[in-house]
Image 1 (tube, rainbow, N blue to C red):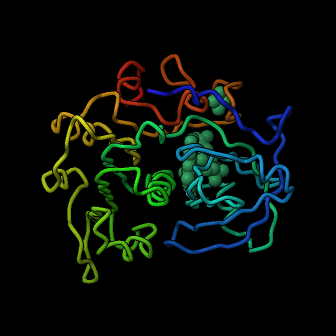
Image 2: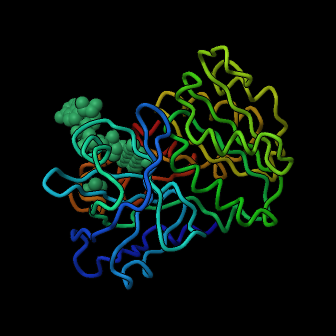
Length: 288
Ligand SMILES: Cc1cc2nc3c(=O)[nH]c(=O)nc-3n(C[C@H](O)[C@H](O)[C@H](O)COP(=O)(O)OP(=O)(O)OC[C@H]3O[C@@H](n4cnc5c(N)ncnc54)[C@H](O)[C@@H]3O)c2cc1C
Ligand code: FES
């Protein structure tokens, strides 16, 4: 299994990893009441060209005069020249980002961290499980798989939200509903009259799917409470512990393994993660 990309830092900031590079907001899409999707384009052409990333990696987004926050990249690495960030309005930085307009300039550092092992996943079935905002990093992986669909076996996406108005990227998933190259099942805890998908927790959907345990990679991202239950279901399907990957969120500052804010067990989420496999997570105290 190739995890060697773990500590590569393709930081376009070069020698000063704390330097944010200016990026222009080129489009803003309202996804829900709380989340917006921003498309950003690094202004310096050299920096833009050097910005190569893996699905599951994150950037440090700076709003000048306000601060920085880590945000997962939601677009696929196969789409060059811009990145997309799905941002929930949660506090100072994300609130200031929500107040921005198209054409405004923000700062970016990164890409940082270890993403999903896309190359290792090729040739296998893929089971992606997302809860709430956890779809943000998985969206990058989903779209990357889409762009190289012939490299993968069966692809199943299970996505749970609290209610229909909180389903992120609904425009894309509505379009994908009838595709036969993706098994996509959406569920909400609290349905309304408009909802024609499943009802209940995302773990309930495991009754509906067949998994080939010898040939499947899992990718999980969601609220902390979700991981244990999703992994239990994956283990009931006899999936290998080192083929179940999950992305963790921890409070971060520097994003580059210097400040110690994001420690989990003996590792730093910002450089050793945010994506870990279950085997690694089992050996990290307090990870799940
Ligand atoms: C690897 C990674 C990827 C992420 N990806 C995304 C993503 O794709 N999209 C996204 O929207 N978010 C993402 N996040 C989460 C995002 O970084 C946080 O929500 C971040 O705190 C937002 O910064 P802020 O300044 O807007 O909010 P903050 O001002 O930091 O506030 C965030 C929340 O924390 C509370 N809070 C703030 N300070 C304190 C304190 N001292 N004590 C207790 N509570 C406090 C606030 O009340 C608020 O509820 C990611 C985080 C990580 C680590
Ligand atoms: S955020 Fe500073 S060490 Fe991870």
